[in-house]
Image (cartoon, rainbow, N blue to C red; front, side):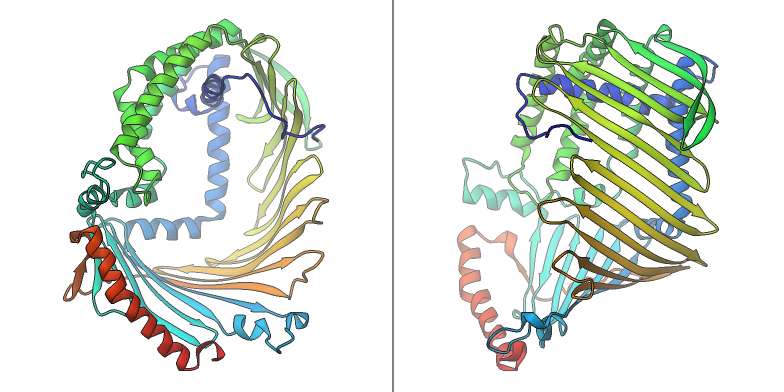
Length: 527
């Protein structure tokens, strides 16, 4: 557990160099396993164990949640529609005000319905929204998006509002010609690209081939040694192969310098960085081409600074990583590295723990520790996941100092239908902590799915039946995605900034006020 907090300010350590070392550690710790040479060397066995362990855990997850994964894949490959109804319940007699108003009357008689449709292959999204807010009926709110435009339908205006991707630049330049070039776009395609995964497949293959394989090849064979050892894991005696990786300070620096040299002149890598930055900033119209160019300029500067600072950076004991391997998978790990800008400002990072992975049980218990001249602490991650005969009973805990976050869950799966009870609990002394309880069911059959979810809170001051939140969802495949009518479109993007402001003030605002007054006069919200 933590002996002192992490909140003390850390001084003097080069964040760039530490980030690079962390990246090399991650790659050297497993990602490069895709480039195993099938021989019996300790180096090959080390990374093959990392690869096998990761793949085994992935396979177990996919085996358990295959119905959900199949449905997700269907939503990415086919046209699908889902209807989601959100509602809540509230039961607290003490909440009635002095005027006799009970919040439960409002909350318990309110719901929101979302009709969502998507065609990820043809890059189309549609959403329709309706709601009953305490007796006030709201409907006919519609939204459509593709790579070229955004369309919005509102119940209080006849026109369908439209904004084209190509119109953003001229509009922004009209607002501030000194700040914007006129070439800016909404970058709508990034919304669909990000939904397909963190990185496109071709980019992943490039990074694996050019960097992961590079690091694997640069690791010296003589840095790995192998021996046999019997260890205890989860109260079981295990005969394991012990493989130790011991990199000296100079060897580690040489590998990092090789990586930095390649990154410095890698135009393809810089394009990937720009594409990912643009995708992650979807909706932030201020993140334009100038910002992307500045990002790459800062990247080049950071690489140069790291190369300059690497020579004086201290890693006195190098990098030490030991794996214990049984049945071609990792059963125990001991990793440590101490580093800092000077000999007086060293920080020690360690990972120690064990795991035992079988088809019916996945056990793990790891300590992640950090210490330097200003602070020290340990985070413990432990779990016991059980899956047998399509039934699950799981427990996971994350603990540091007097703070503990835990998960307890049970599940059953039968003919594509899952029932579950899941509890997330926070224990901490200041507020007394509390629990989020999540129960429900989900079924998947051919081209349809439906699910019900109930969320409730339990704290020292809130009972489980006081507050709850419900989600009911139904999904199916469809022939086509609904769109908005183009018979009466108001092209906002083709207007100047002043014209947009006048349109809002003279048309939209009065129509909205009249529409809202009509709802309230009709008895909504109890008026």
